Length: 197
Image (tube, rainbow, N blue to C red; front, side):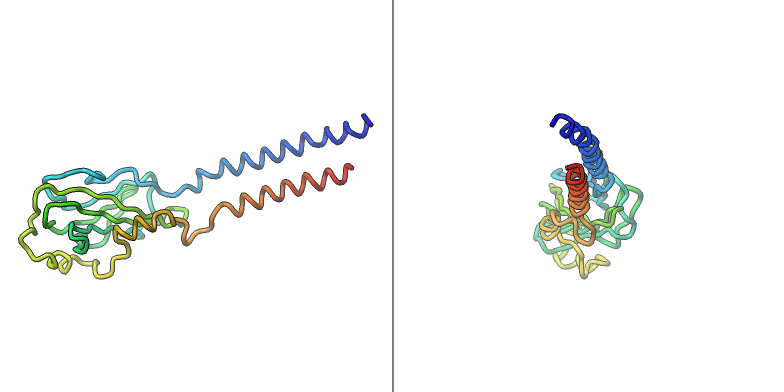
């Protein structure tokens, strides 16, 4: 009885070590697949500014895929777009020109980029203009009409916030590989135990 249990116990240890090594390798691979994270913005999220910005700049932890960014700037009325032209990428920074702002109030910035790993990431932030901008006296439709590239914005602040949790669209999620690795390791351990019995 002692002789039959000793080999089984002696073989269980290497199998458990192999299982732990496999799980640690999967955990270590997690950060490599991390998506881009917004680290800052100019104007800063939640800030109040007296002077209307001529440009909005977003800074990410890693450089997003070039030419995939969309940035929108929507005025206090919730419909007028102030972004002007296509976003410009410069490493970790992406910026877009802003047309002269109008009424004082809260301006929302919606953004969407594609991470280096191919996953789209989106979100929204805002700033408050405390003094009316140069376009305050102009009818509210004028800035949108004069802003190139805003006829069919891909992201608005309202749907950017709703789409933010679903940042795995268009990519392969990691959980099936983790599950497959765990099943393979458990199957291998079970097979070896059956042969030893």
